[in-house]
Length: 443
Image 1 (cartoon, rainbow, N blue to C red):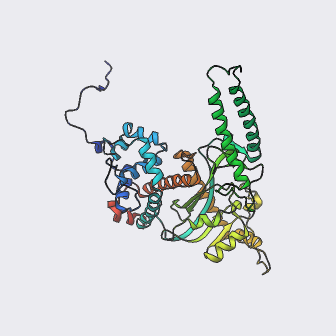
Image 2: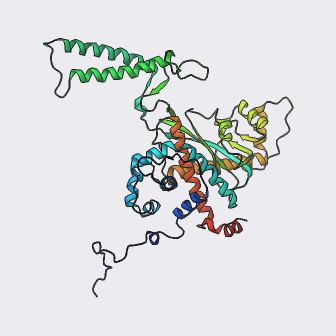
Image 3: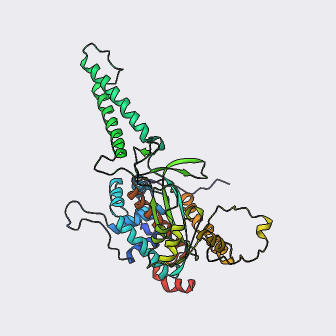
């Protein structure tokens, strides 16, 4: 019997133009994102309202484009531009024939921080409306190190910067002297004295800026340590992204030039990110209260919060519980994930502490109660899997934008994309036009 294969014809034009909607399944995530964005009535778009200049791309289209591409693991503006040609779903988002270039995409992403924040709040409101998010409940807080758009090899200590200045000054003097000497020996082929002087002068200028920041003599105040003093000699400065820091990453056995990305995650079953922020503090000691406060009150009235020992400080616990009326479950010491036989045996309820007991002792007792153990256990089951999804499934492992503010903006988009993808999975592919059916399912 002769081999039978389907004919692949790439050359014969179609008699009728194709409908791009027929190429995308009805229950595809892109339909959910487009419909959700259209229903949100967003107002934070930064656009040219005067109508001058070239025609603008639809802001809602650009927002959907970013959300979908981030949700499918494409973060570079050049990758997104390429997808407008090669990915049928992205072409559908852009109407088939529109192809915003990477510069337009990058500018939209950079200039619309207010829009992303507004959309983040409204998608959580949508989750509440659909019955996927409770208005009152607990959260778990954690942070993860995300690589900055800078090499750690570009970082130098302030003491080394001073040595660089001295070395560069000597090299510039030597080059100037060589230029003035008519009989000087020429440099290697391809090198010129003026270019070498210019290069060293620029490096010297940058190094001097770092030194002046330490001496606090520039108009811009020098970075301050927690004690309010100028940086020590060992303090690091990165020439590519000065606001990033060298931080312990992974299992703590290696260091990266990074930012500390924080997230507050719902522990009541949705796994949605309710609050987020980015800091350049290498540890989490001062991050508990601000991360909890990043949760919008209209999305969640926080009843309790759980966090690991890296967040513990007496000041944070007092502020959280006295001013915000929140019950904290924060580990006061590192816990071994391995459970011994003794750990599994039923224990007597911890005895009451005296009135003179300190905050640390009270917190330790609270975590040993059945309720405390149950609430703290939720931390590992909620926030840690969210970071795993962002890094492994979405593939977001380093920032593309530089600077603390812009890194925070990009983390907003990542959290927004994660929440859209999570909410779509929770709805089971229902369109928003089928809200009544979805509410009945979640009831």
